[in-house]
Length: 176
Image (cartoon, rainbow, N blue to C red; front, side, top):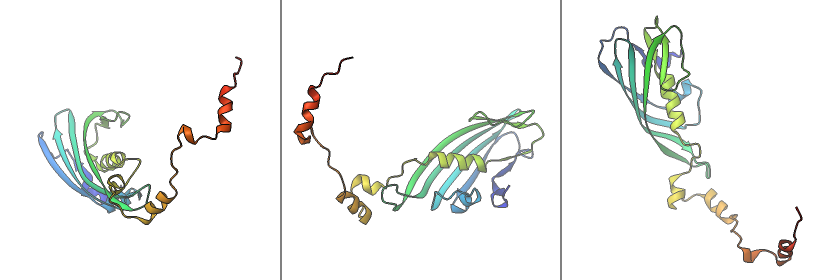
């Protein structure tokens, strides 16, 4: 466990059976702890509703903010909005089991829960795979790369543009 992430460890043994609120601010340093460098920067707020019950823990993560990423088309940096809500049920069992996405089983002897991995995974999975600068879609981005791509843009061909010599091939009948 990285000492940078100790604030994400919740000692639930000392907590009363009730709802508790935790808040975290996620920046670039958080992702560096996981050696993840797809985000140039990050400004995210995590609100965690943590309810301790006699036999289980109920967690509700709400994450809002932006991550700075490079556009896949122009390589220009832009802020990608991230907004996720994710429930997690923590039950107690004989051994650790995280095979189910929404139910985590931890050993009875555990007294704390590290939520950093869940937050990290949720944010990374919420970021779109294809990252396109919003200025490309609305036409407001002024980029040299975009201008160069426009120069090399291939126009779509219509059936009128096809070389007439190829039309004879359509008349060939192939026996089956």
